[in-house]
Amino acid sequence: MKKMIKKFGKLITASFIVMGVGLVTFLSTPIWLQFGMDTDLLGLFIILIGLDIYVIGLIRRKNLGRVKLVALITLCSVLSIAILTFVVPLIFPDFGVH
Image 1 (tube, rainbow, N blue to C red):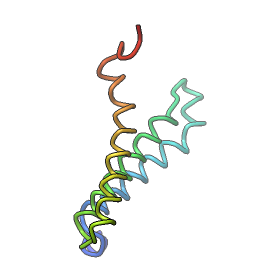
Image 2 (image 1 turned 180 degrees about the vertical axis):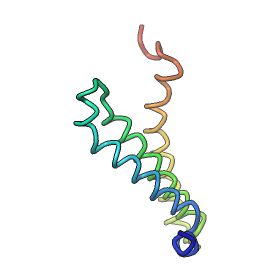
Image 3 (image 1 turned 90 degrees about the horizontal axis):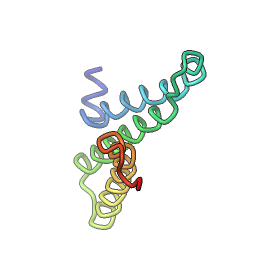
Image 4 (image 1 turned 90 degrees about the vertical axis):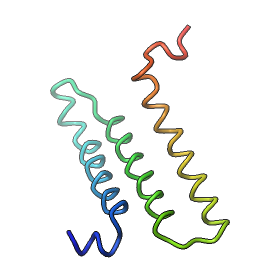
C-alpha cells in the first residue's frame, strides 16, 4: 500500500478505493434487490465521488498547462454538479416539487 501511495499519491489512491467500493456496490445490486434495497444509484453516486477525487488528485499532482488545467477544473465542477443532484433531494425532500 505504501508503494501505491508513493507512486500515485494519497488522493489518487483514495479515489481508487472509493471507486472500487462504488463498483462493488453497483454490481451487488441484484443481491440487495432480494432484500428490498436498490443500490444501483448509490453505487453510481460513490463512483462519481471517486472520479471527482481522482480529478482533484490529478490537478494537485501534475504540473499542467493552462488549457489542461482549465479543462480538468471544468470536468471537476461538472462532476460536482452531478453529485449535488443526488445530495440536494436528500437534504431538502420537497426541493423542486410544487
